[in-house]
Length: 319
Length: 191
Image 1 (spheres, one colour):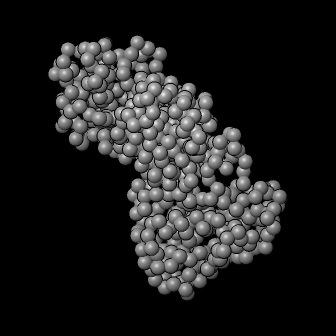
Image 2 (cartoon, rainbow over the protein chains, first blue to last red):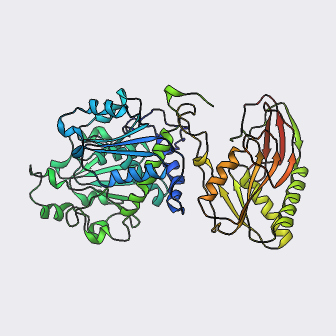
Image 3 (cartoon, helix red, strand yellow):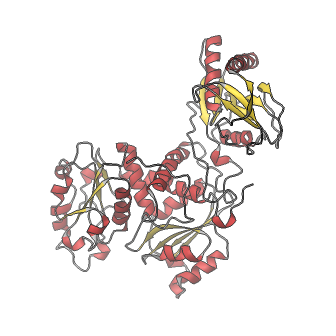
């Protein structure tokens, strides 16, 4: 399966991996590869998005994704405005659409949105002229995370096609797992979900992935092992007996990692619970690429901003 | 700035392979005459890159020491990216490679065709974000006129009188399979 790179992004928004073609994914990854270099320059800033405004609308707590977007925006010389749920009128009962309409009065070119409700970015994309970038919506998608994960895999393993990727942890609550499943299956990789039955989604087969209830058989021959955070805050309704037991059965330890391919890479979208889903020796070990994921995240977000800045269907006129 | 490098059917060849090679040799000689040391060549993507390599090879054979050669992608500094482009198209990004620090060097920016001067403006801005060269000079294979900015080349291979409706196409080994410069009429406006 040779993926032909698209000439541009077809839509004005990036709301999910589900709506991107393999060619568009290829274009984003290739563009990010060139943009990675900007971080190594003495002046880590290029004027590509000069005069454009980005609103970062974060209705859910986020540190690394918000920072990553903000760094990407600043490196491209865009002006940024940050709205977070705790400090905005949302806490006073304003609806998403009223918030968005008010923001549009300030004429932003992009809105980066994280929202607890699945589908919020998609709805917003239909009502505002700005380009919407999904920074995580409910339990639906987190496209920029999946793109940076794929970028990191390609960087270390040279390809996506044919890779065996294990994704283990709280799959049911994970938009990262869903976006990764969409992306990796589109690009010809094999995806294996691992979770206790209580943490597997009901529609797992429709995603085109295989599901395992024990981690050992899934790890066999794996090229990538991606551990997801056990979302401690969502575990009040008990899905497994204890953290200790979860560690005993599902955590990525050195012994378990030895079952994977000798060159397998260890990934984690963060934040990690050391000693719950991942052992410290593995998280900081030779095969870990966790910190590179963070660096690559900035390049991926720059690539999306750069590509979306290229013309709008409503203002298409060449100079 | 981007050239369609496919040769149109009805064109006038203004330089053949021999003329190109002769010109490259002369350009290298002019560079040596003007700046004896600390010279670094930086080719502007796309055709500036093979041209810089070719000039560097000549410099290496005349002076005995190959100059440092870099390549520059000016896309992120262009004045025509952003919402005024046709819908959903952005120029493809390419690698910028500056193997050593440009501080204190005499940089020769190398490009195939000098036209509006906008590429050179973007290249100057790009380069200056990487450091503070002693001097930046400009070497082009063809100067076709029609400047839109106050830009002039220091080393010019050939001056070609053109109209804006014409299109200058440069093909250079090893990026292309032949050497030569052609003038095409009624071609889409490049820059």
